[in-house]
Image 1 (cartoon, rainbow, N blue to C red):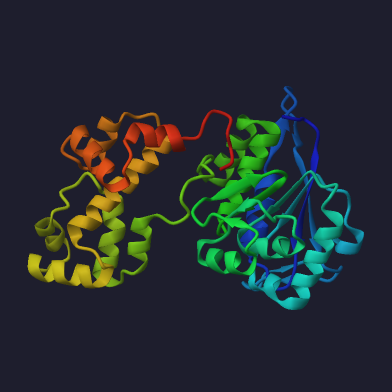
Image 2 (cartoon, rainbow, N blue to C red; image 1 turned 90 degrees about the horizontal axis):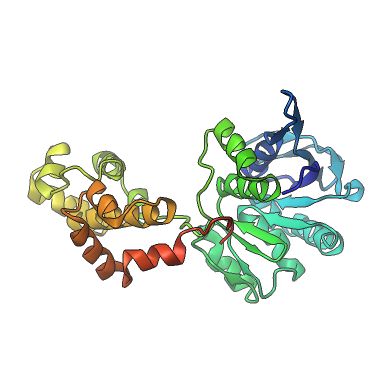
Length: 331
């Protein structure tokens, strides 16, 4: 932890994803240190760096005027490379990759958000390193850059001085982790409270849970039911009870549910409950008995056996392997 103000540069270009830029930018800008007398000092100086001095436009239509151009970029402690389809345009990509290859050496930390890794990967700086990106682009990234060890499941990863993160809002998770790394948990927690986000989604947490995959395919009443179900796992989620919620007979409900989600209702419910057990094992100190009961299993033993059948590992060992050790921020 250091009390010295740090300069963070965030690259900008036409076709950027606005949240990849604004999410980390607002996170760093919200970090302050108290002086003990009621005053506060910013932890970071945030500098948006454009390819040139002209304003650039995000895919959402947001127009941003950079503070500096690549040619005039100041010395930086940390550099963030946001994503967006514009970065994969050949001319922009070549400009960014060439600049990164020549100028990233003295920078203490270099991080990508989402598909921002497409700007870093061509430089060779990530070769042999473990990286991540948005799950939908992971396979393409691995195909284009076979020297990268691509992990499509985690939110963010640190490998040496290089930090890579998953889709869009994971840029905020990454920024909070970097703030905690620099200035401690109290400062990062203050930022998280101000932004009304979770301070700690562990870096190793899956980007895209199985229930979310299933919900993504749902529409209409059944889609709404999937969303409701995720927040009511301790309820009666039997086929008759669920069918009644959507005004269908149990037989009609089972047939339509399986056709829409590719899973029988009972299998879907068990998957949702086990996914929540995994999350709580990683993020809380609650016992498996308490967690299992809270998500609708008859007992801790029933939940434990279901967990072992599905994942081939005891809940206690899963927690030991994946729970974030004290002080560990990155996957």
